[in-house]
Image (cartoon, rainbow, N blue to C red; front, top):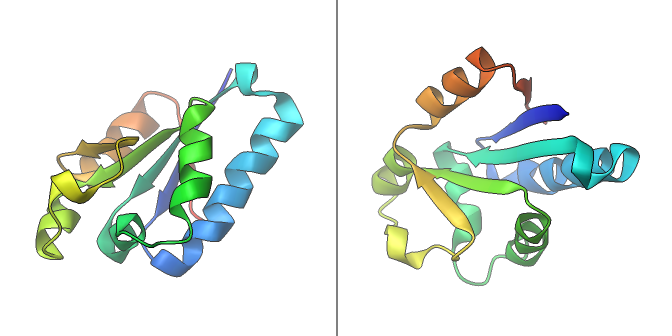
Length: 111
């Protein structure tokens, strides 16, 4: 089982992150992958209504990919958790989530 956390902290990197996860799943099969896309910094803005990347992220979530948003970043940008798509899970601090996952053997990718 491959475990990967894809870290995105800039909105313009999200399409690359989505493509990376899609390519990984295609290569080894979704049964062989545990993946998470962790957003912090300005990247949490991809969850605003009208964002073109919401649908691709929702499709990834439908395949079992965790889509995560940093609560600290949401607050600093004035975004409420209630505004997020239902498939997004909020974590208290993105940095803490990254460290925990890496210490648990997850590979770190930053596109």
